[in-house]
Image (tube, rainbow, N blue to C red; front, side, top):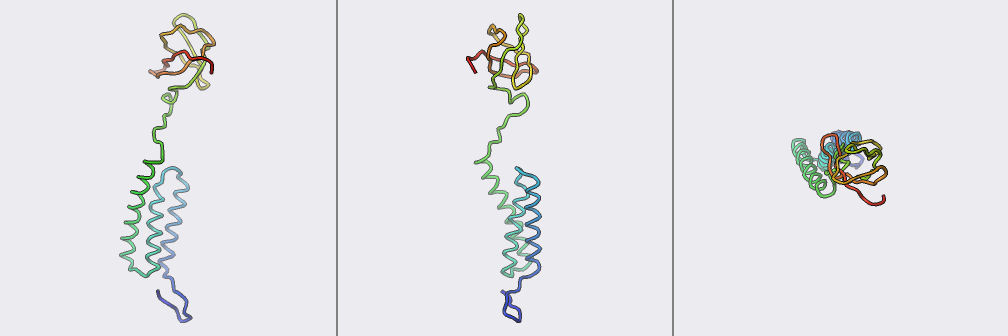
Length: 151
């Protein structure tokens, strides 16, 4: 550590630059929730700031920044694989296993309300208006359903 004439510790200005970069990357991360991309850069900049505080040369600080960023990516990737469910189904595929109610039944034409929308359904069972159904599969714009008991 370098001391000034009064005996106080002198902090190099590049220390503050690394801290500002870490803060900027963290703010970017806050603006993109769920991405966890900029957080790794923030960790790398923070490690570089700590190394600057110990008066390590700038070239070594840059290497520490890159290494810290890579370590952040690796750690976050492993953590996300273990703690986050990426198998979230969306759009019509999210209808599988949802319950609904038959709203129209006339011969081979059957319609049911599932998730607030009216769908044409296919089934092997004879359904009547008011029957409770569960979506088994989605094929094109038709749902394959089965009858279930009370909701």
